[in-house]
Amino acid sequence: MAKTKTAIAITDKKTAIRDPKPEVQRIEVLASRILDGDILLPKFQRAFVWDRTQILELLDSIMNNYPIGSVLLWLTTQRLRSEKNIAGLAIKDRALEYPVNYLLDGQQRLSSICGALFWDSQDKNSQWNVAYDLRKQQFFHANTLDDLPLHQVRINKLPDAAAFFKHVAGLDTLTSDDKLLLKERAEELFKRFKDYSIATVTLSDMPIGSVAPIFERINSTGTRLTMVDLMRAATWSEEFDLVDSIDEDILGALKDKGFGSIDRKSVLRNFSAASGRSFTADGIDDLRNCNISELKNAAQTTLDAYRRAVDFFATEMKVPNSNVIPYVNQVVVIAEFFRVCPNPTKSQRDEITRYFWKTSLTGYFSGWNTGQMAADKKMLEEFSEGIISALSTHEAMPTDEIWRVRQFRLNNAHAKLLALLLAEQGPRDLLTGQKVTLDQALAWENDKEYHHIFPKSFLKQRGVASQMANCVANFAMITSSSNKLISNSRPSEYFKKVRSELGADFSAVMASNLISDEAMVAAMQDDFDAFISARSVTLHAATRKLCGLD
Image (cartoon, rainbow, N blue to C red):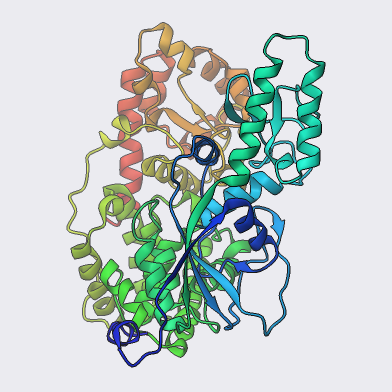
């Protein structure tokens, strides 16, 4: 809905909207109303995001009679898509003609209260398996389904007075001097949760067009919603749900291809571009002005572009999943290219490939600002139309030192670049000479397939700092079994043995790991500095070649 229309819906004096109705209700009553289906979570609410500490802090605030804020409800007979459960608990269905209250503000708090009070799972590690220690006077997460010591009481006993006070009566069997004090504390716990009340404000007779902007506004502070959360509320209707469109229609279709874990915000950038807008936050915000048909068309166009992009990554770049791509915005730009140019020429595909390697090496997307987004979108349009024949980032190329200063970590872009660079060579295991299984090595779920060429423990004995030992240039695709055999051996020892076993094939195996003859000479002398320097030169030259620079 357009901003101007939203403003009219809220401020037009002719619109018959009742004043908000405030009242005070006990938290147990509110929790029961949710489970009875009288209070529902509209689909444009985000998922539960609080961690265990936040849940315990909320319960502690209630126990100490601290204020926890009010709750905002929307009473209506409009039937909106809503969640079927809260905190793992089923919500009852209500008769269609019966008005319900949709929760606009307070989801995290009420979810926590519902979960703690009415938990009935058999999962001992559940975040709702919460108890109160009467001695320590603090809440904690139990890690068992067994009965707890008598001085500890589960919170889900509070709604059932009989069950709770049966537990309290058991305190009489204690022989400790504090049993009377523990009973007093137990009764105080029961009284606090039975009597604790919070303010609820109910909005009545408001159209959905007015409710979504209110939801967006009240959720723009506190625990921040993401851009996707806010735009879900701003564009939501019974016929279109932005998050469902991204998660189910787009990412769901890419899951089997290994690209289902791309973050929503990145997909939203492409969604915005597909609607005729930009990658930027302002462009995304303007999606609120789209009608349902425009939103659905943008979703389908985005999916089509992603399918082409994923096919390009898999077949031409040997990239099996999105996790190993150095920068997620590379996916955004390449998907946008395939949107504006669904049938590129061979020269255009070759240039896109070179662009991928260039942006990976330079780190262009490590800080993609608004100006770059606009410039890149325009560049893609000109490139697709044949106005320009090359893609540029205007970013200075780093020297080969980059391979010596960057650390090998799963979240490091240059570590991912190394993996893709080695994949291009068809790497073979350093000890056995067998081909490395790339699908496993590039799964990028852990680093077990990547190990130090100069063992870390060996380097530590020589006084080499761990930061230098962990540089990207000191890593190769080595199976866990081979790594165990290498252990903390000197490179000169294990490479000498490997050369003897592989014979004439030794140089080819080393070359497949981008280890040059010069680097091998250094390794045979256990000269770490010389090895890293030589291998950095080789890695850099191989990458520059893929960039089309040499």
